[in-house]
Length: 139
Image 1 (cartoon, rainbow, N blue to C red):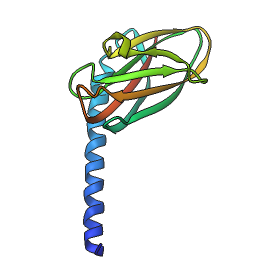
Image 2 (tube, helix red, strand yellow):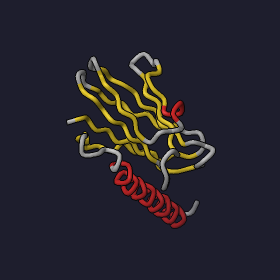
Image 3 (cartoon, rainbow, N blue to C red):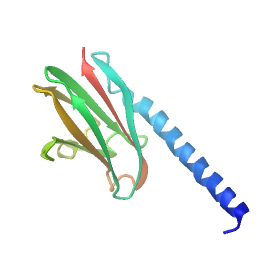
């Protein structure tokens, strides 16, 4: 590839990446609506651009004695994102697919644990998009 074509190609890829992450930022705001006044956001929005059957993995520590709310969003309507929560050994603790892809769920945590959250697009609704997860804990 010629040097000029490489530069143009690199610029186009960069622009599309920036546009994709901008979409994720606005989606994070939409997802935050599920972290109601009873909850305090942990201040992070976990984001990933997904296509097809890709999945994103996020790790976080949940502290014992707290109630957490996890909200997951993709696209302009709720229910487009499937998320699973697994313990350190890979055991499934929760999947919103068992609850019609509920956009958020509350968890009471008895003991501190590190969990892995896997997020994937519901292929029947979206073929590509931004996956956003936000976490809040009860006041």
